[in-house]
Length: 294
Image (tube, rainbow, N blue to C red; front, side, top):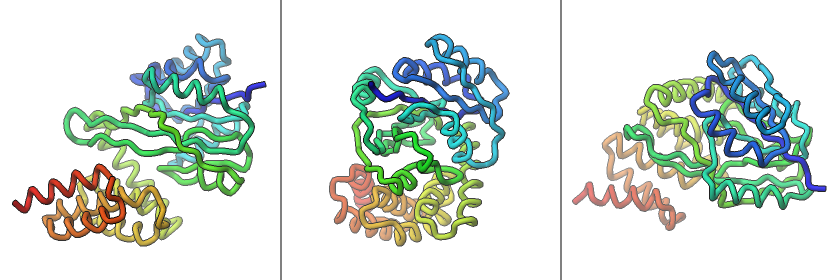
């Protein structure tokens, strides 16, 4: 018998995007566990309606926001009954080619202990305030009491999964994300994430993952000096084979550029390209830096 799959989702005030998100995945899973963290719009009603339309019980759970994404995601896991967990946010969705690829992956699951990575893809914002991004993200894993989310924000499932013996598997399945489209929403999320990351950094100092995202978020907030300090320390602490390292060097070089130190930005970029010669972002930034010198 094929293993059952639970979709877990946390959301708050996502009525504008939630219908598209759930419609792109609902018929591929066996149950939907939806945790609402305090919506003031029709988010809960939309979630319940989609569940009902696909013949699934309306498992919409209210959970008070605690400044902790892991707490809300772990509440989802507490209610999930499937053997595998697939998670999405209310502003994620699949286009048809990637939806078909996901369906094939889900149909072939067995009882292995694995975490499947997919590509989290955000298009560039129309106002130019956020660049296009594509990064691996752990999206599908076994439902086990040993596997739980960690971190207040930019939370991770892989550390506990790896401790349980799971292996990481990469896929080329892309998940679309629209969370940074508008300047108002973007600014609100940046401010929230900075606050939570600073709390997390105070609780667990010198965590490379936290420092990386503090650097990234300070850069998004147009605070390059603060970003540089965080990124330098993160790059000292990140393991040599960490997938975060190329992007860390890219952001560091770009922050030096924004500070007006093109020479230092170029040195960072050159050194990073010696390690990651095929990284498209580093190549593009180096070309821009060389153009600035001509």
